[in-house]
Image (tube, rainbow, N blue to C red):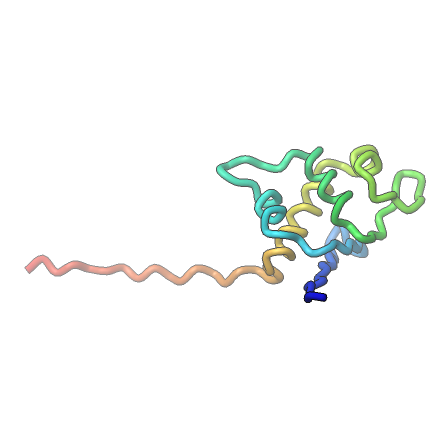
Length: 117
């Protein structure tokens, strides 16, 4: 029997989404690359919903009827706004690649003078 790393990601939100909780299975590199998009392409909302339905283990999101929202493509597309799906994808990607805090600010540029002698 071999070893399998069984990681999960828990997304917690602030601001308007404070209190939302989403737990996802480990994300293979190929899926993380798809979440990021490549060559200027972006992930479609349909594909994002499919990936969420596949990787979300649990969440505390409710539908319009105030009942727990099933983790299915139909429930996601039928109940969540596009902006919310996009936010979930962005935060999932950040967790999958280990971005947990704002990146350090860029170093200040130092002007270089070239001697003209």
